Amino acid sequence: MKYLAQFGAYLLFLRACFRMPDKWLMFRESFLRELYKMGNDSFLIVSIISIFIGAVGVIQIGYQLIGSLVPMYVLGRIVRDSNILEFSPTVTALVMAGKIGSNIASEIGTMKVSEQVDALEIMGVNAASYVALPKILASLFAIPALVTYSMFLSNFGGALSCELSGMISVDAYVQGLRMDFDSFSITFALTKAFVFAFLITTISAYHGYKTEGGALEVGSASTRAVVQSCIAIIFFDYILTQIMLYK
Image 1: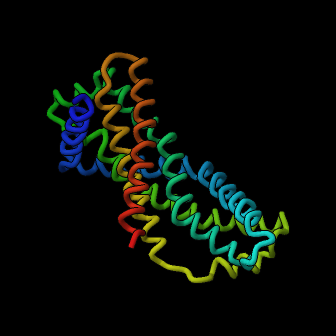
Image 2 (image 1 turned 180 degrees about the vertical axis):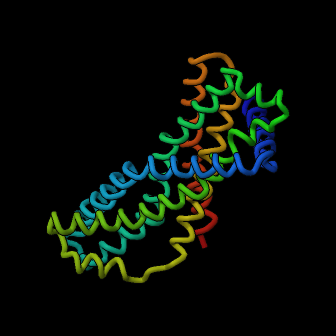
Image 3 (image 1 turned 45 degrees about the vertical axis):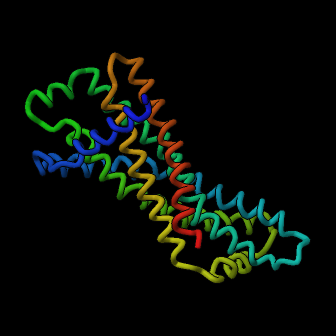
């Protein structure tokens, strides 16, 4: 019953969030600020992780292909599909859950325990929409953009690994990248990115908004936000894969 009550409170929080902003100018400024913060501040960590995902994927998959009857250029196709379908959207989302999810929960939670949210409600402002909606909408642009960037960079990291390890030539790797490409893979990856972005920001904002107490409770809310966001990402990763790829 406890989890059903929390889920109901989460749905009510979403209903409060998705209402018309009271002041569009303030909303636009907040949206642009959150968009810049989510995208720019996450650029470096996504770059590093994406390059190493592609590089390690080439080495591990190439190790399995050595001595087999499968042509080595197939390595490029396997790495490409692995990066686009799974690694780039899912790993990027998990990283963003830890980075921006904890930040959102702690920021809103601090506003709640310092009674800033209560002050907004007293003034007649829809506090849930004011503090959460710009972050939610900004993530729907920032995280898919980062996933797209990660898909490109992970395949580049694979080419870099081929050059450094000498396992296969870069030309053979690129031949595999170009082989039998299905554009639906991009659609699937971006669909996951949008769903993951929504889950990360709404779950984190909910836990921050429901924080009661002091600084210790803010830290606990931040931890719960990250843990539940990661669980939701893994769960919906399976659901979306089952719905969109199983034919």
